[in-house]
Length: 454
Ligand SMILES: Cc1cc2nc3c(=O)[nH]c(=O)nc-3n(C[C@H](O)[C@H](O)[C@H](O)COP(=O)(O)OP(=O)(O)OC[C@H]3O[C@@H](n4cnc5c(N)ncnc54)[C@H](O)[C@@H]3O)c2cc1C
Image 1 (tube, rainbow, N blue to C red):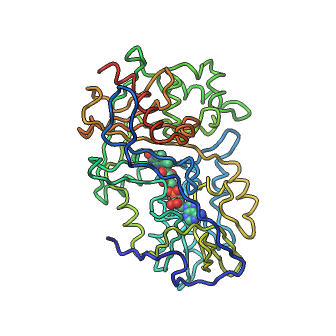
Image 2: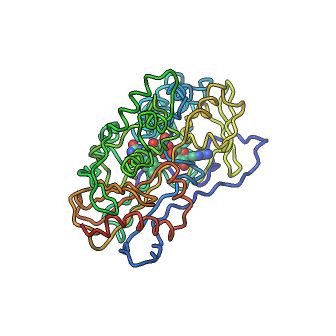
Image 3: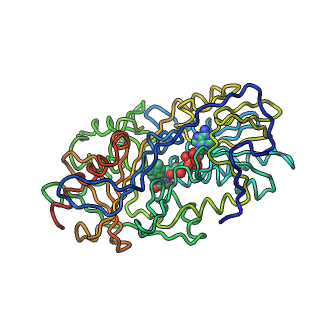
């Protein structure tokens, strides 16, 4: 147990000034991500002994997985979104980071940046709130607490972590199933350092395998994409990644290239026809490092000492030159001197929070211009290996597979755990499936690996 103070509901004696105008609103309920019960697969294929899946696309507290820069949008939109509003409202979250948006390290950095901006203008004894207990919010809280401020956190869900979720269930999983962000290393170096400091186990996944129904196929090199992007970047106007590839003579329906593009969508949430070629999505890491431990301890360490109000979705943010009032969907309103707002771009785009006065045009322009990508994941554990292979990075080429990108954790851990990752339009399709259909789609996507027997 940590020393976090847990408040029951938002109004439990916290510093509050009730706003007369506030009426209770229904509290949105996230679509549950499912560690259990295990669905029943139909057909004769292998049956997993454990199953977990995500549904971030339909979750009202994320409404997607990771922000992206759509074709025609400049990264400066992120700086506009990050700007403080009247020295009262400080904006954080991965979407406000121009360097590596959509990542864990972006979230971490943004929270620290927003906290510094707040500390530049705050005076001793001020009351500060942080909205959202994801990585950005938790990082902001740790910095504000270290500066001696008393901090109250309002989190819409009944748990902390946001788009990071480690399912800890020792009966089902040899290590936690990670349903959100879990890749660290490369642009996630800052996150990697945090995991090291907390002794959280990681593994590096190596060796690709590309397979079609006919067997092993040649990997498609990243250069197919980088060359097309380089040519498109010389043009007078931005074009989509799909158009850039077409202009370079590539057919994005060609099975090998489609599998590579599926891997790009799986790591960024972007579909090729949405992505900018001037500001293209990052290509997947060749040897990703993944977290295998419980990422909940990252949040416990960052949030230790904060006053926590879980299940408290903020539905209204009213601010003037004297302070900020937060309206909670359960009916209460509370006043603070300054607030750090870390809700995802998808929540801002959905009008889930009413701002009074409205956010400045520059913020609203940025919210409208940026895109929210979709990533979903499914974890499967089998009693026996599906195939004997040293390859950890599986690409499904051709056919009708919904999930073309898989990580096998067997080479790194000795455990028969497979992780399917799907992005872009296919992720939206996956999120709409019930558990039985999601499992069926996963097993049928894996058929090119299971049918060949190694
Ligand atoms: C499936 C998936 C895989 C990913 N993989 C990777 C990866 O491997 N590597 C990587 O670097 N990144 C990855 N990401 C992205 C990474 O997880 C995010 O960039 C990061 O976690 C975002 O942190 P954040 O604090 O900005 O937002 P969030 O974690 O979304 O935190 C925002 C918080 O605000 C809360 N909230 C929302 N609305 C309200 C409201 N009205 N009132 C109060 N609280 C509210 C939410 O519940 C949430 O807790 C992945 C994301 C997903 C979904």
